[in-house]
Image (tube, rainbow, N blue to C red; front, side, top):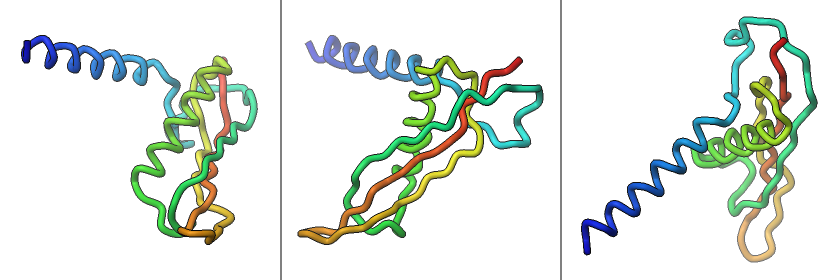
Length: 109
């Protein structure tokens, strides 16, 4: 029984990884080696606990993943000019801020 539970959880992890591998990459300007057309600007936002200036690695991971998912919905080949930042803080009970991820979706010619 334990073996079947471990196999099931391994299968789910592998499937999730494959789905993420099919998403368009986030590229720096130096990595873009061929002509492209801009499809549009992607902007994704979410609320998070913490001040805007204490971004963590997980916040950047969320931003890049969100940009990649939105680019895939558009049929883009990649995302360039990524920008992830915390904005607009509020203190009701705990400090919270709005996370914003922006990038440009592109399609290679």
